[in-house]
Length: 259
Ligand code: NAP
Image (cartoon, rainbow, N blue to C red; front, side, top):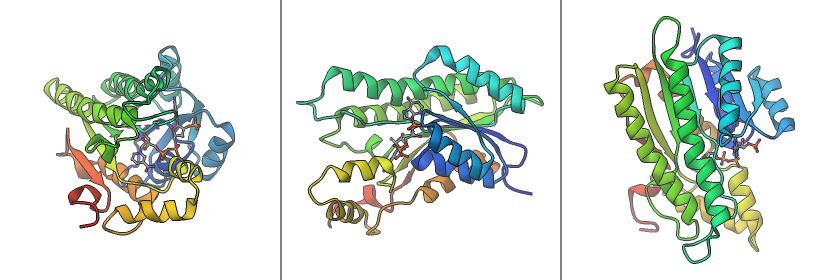
C-alpha cells in the first residue's frame, strides 16, 4: 500500500516547478490530486503524466474558491492534503525601488492566496466523511527566515506565511480539528523562477553556478527533494509535527556564506 493511498490533495500552482513536482510525488504516493494555475498547456502535460485533475484557478480570486472546492468535493468527496504553493516575485525590488502595484500583487498571491487556501482547506477537511482531519503545507522559503535585499515584497510575504502557518496550526489543534499545518523553507531550487532570474543576467551559466555555490552542498536543490518533504508532511509519518518550519536548503541558512 502506498503512503498516501485513499487521500485527496490540493496543490495550488501545480503547473510548474515545485508544485508540478509535488503533483507527481503525491500522485505516485497514492493520493488523488487536484492542482491549479493558469498555464493550460503545462497543466495538460502534468495531467497526462500523473492522472491528476487540473482546474484553472487564481489563488487570489476569492469568488472562484467555492467552485474549486465544489469540484474537489464532487470528484473525490474529501480533502486530506493542501499544499499552498502558488507564489510569485514578479516586479519586486528593494525598499527604495519597489512600486506599490508590484508589492500589492506579490502580497495578494503569496500571502492572501495562502490564507484563502488554508481557510477553504480547513472548511473541507472539517467536513471529511469519517471525521475532521488533514495536513496543510505552506511553501514559504529560506527568505521567510533571512532577508533578500533586492526582494522586499517577496521576503516580507514569505515571512508572513511562516507565522500564518503557526497561527493556523495552533487554532486547528486547539479546536480539535485533527488538522496540522506546517511551513516549508526551500533554499534555491532549480525551477522556472530561478531560470528566469538568471536569464536576465549577463552570464546566465555563471549566475546559475554562483547560486548553486551559495549552499554548502555546492549545488541547487531539486524540485523532487522539496516534493519528498511535502509528501512526508502530508503523511501520517509526520503526525506529531505541527506549527513547525522545515528547512530544505542544504545548510544554506545554517552558517555564514563562504565560511
Ligand atoms: P514557478 O516555477 O514559477 O511556478 C509557480 C507556480 O505558481 C506555477 O504553477 C504558477 O502557475 C503558479 N501560480 C502563480 N501565480 C498563481 C496564482 N495567482 N494562482 C495560482 N497559481 C499561481 O515557481 P517555483 O520556483 O516552483 O515556486 C513555487 C513556490 O515555491 C513559490 O511559492 C515560491 O515562492 C516557493 N519557493 C521557490 C524557491 C525556488 O528557489 N524556486 C525557493 C523557495 C520557495 P501558472 O504559471 O500556470 O499560472
